[in-house]
Amino acid sequence: MILTEGSGKWASVKGESGEQGVKIYNVMGDIPKPLWIEFPVGTTLQTILKEVQDAKDIIAAEVGGATEVLISKDQFNKPIGFGRGKLNGVGSIVLISKKRDLLRLYHEKMEFMEEESCTQCVPCRDGSKRMNVFLQDLMKGKKPGKDSFDCMKLVAEAAELTAICAHGKALGSLYKNILKTAQKYQKK
Ligand code: SF4
Image (cartoon, helix red, strand yellow):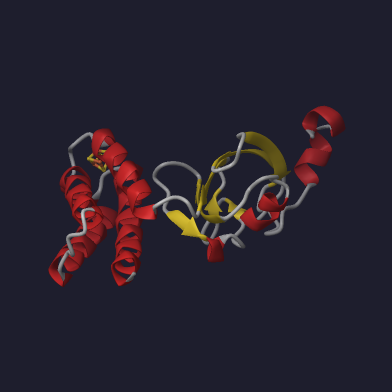
């Protein structure tokens, strides 16, 4: 838009949540070809999806990068932008179709988190390792007891409260989301 209509127009465009400016989003994942798409800041994922051809059976998405939780379809109406209540607007959107196993995806994310930890903080260093074991057990069909869920919930809270950097604080939300997904998985 800057190239075709100038920076004045760019700055005055408003998204669905009232934020100003436009942004280029990289949409990838379960679509035949990744693409770059321009929308106002504050646009919802459901609006963006209307423009993404061949996005079929999308049930979840990772909006904003590897440390973000996997959001389910009922959250696609949240604006993508900056600030409380919004999905992270840095520009990365990974679409996840129903053919994926969300626990497996979370396990891959946690392996990455374990590798990324600089090992200074316990809930990040040991929490990510413990969460990986928890997920592996679950995927092998072993049922974790209530104690395991309660223990991981405490680790999530500890990560949010005590991790030194943003990586560890983000892990708190990730752990909590994994536990919610795991509980649904157990009920199947
Ligand atoms: S939270 Fe940050 S500082 Fe702490 S171990 Fe993890 S990466 Fe290192």
